[in-house]
Image 1 (cartoon, rainbow, N blue to C red):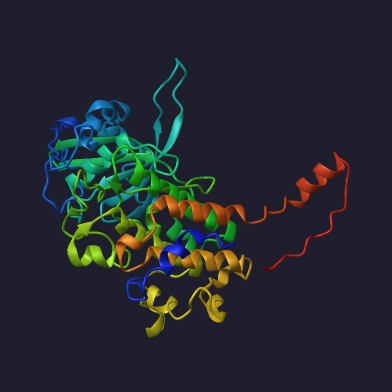
Image 2: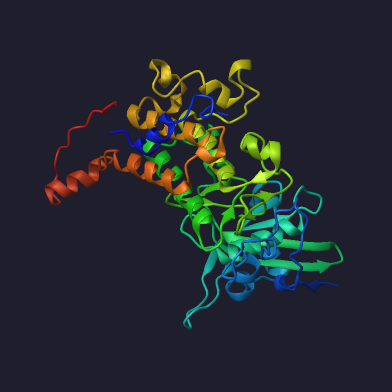
Length: 406
């Protein structure tokens, strides 16, 4: 039975039309105002709209209650020294917020033990960039409250107003395997195996489900491959919460906001109306599912004219069609489960439905992906490990196992 059976019944009752696609002073965080205009990603105050309940808590109030004490207030000089003066050699990358550097800081001493040298990623706000103080504040408050194995951990921040202007920095746990984007699209990296791709996208889905269904509903608003970071074990962790928003409360069905995000990942209904819901994130997730399958970017101007827009190109190869395999990443070398790949493509199609209400929830997405992962055979142990296990220390000849193509 297909692992996508949960939505087949739902879709069968819909018409084709409805189911269609597509001298310095230090500034403390608690002292800074959280008020903002609707085009900002910063945290909004608790909603007082009709229908909201007294039990609703906003991210900003939760941060004041418990998040502020969990984050370390770093000294600017300490972070400057940790990154060798924000040396170009320490630079990990650059985005809309600013540059990110690798550094080493002393961890906070605990239980009387000596502090350890800890690898970190330091993000510095570009004062001339597209994002600003409110996005920095949103990141501090969201990650000061939210905690999940599939969210990047914010260790602390730095906010200093000096002669060179306001300095806003964020300090995260270091992710040695960079991002999903790097491993999918940069040929300098070895290709991700099929099983690893499934594990990564499952972890990202679990992180997104936590945001949507936690104590405070959070709409991520910028789900894309470059924001899925990978730790030493290739565990996926969502990063960059500068554009995140709290979801609607009470009787409200959406949050009205100016459209922001990344071209190619933003849901068309959000672009057209400015109405933001968790289903906006689900659409973005569908795009990344197809990137996982194809190894192609959502938009690639270097490809032939008919292949530049990923979603238009894959539409020619329906999941159940004979030529479906044409979309699969050639770097997989055919080493994947065709049935699982078809199921993942069907899941992507459900995420990309034109009617946002018909898209699955992220919990439903997680269930489908978890079954897909569980259906995959365990990878064979390395020959040395197999020899040790079977021979108990004696030398054993191990015949090479042929690769099974599914």
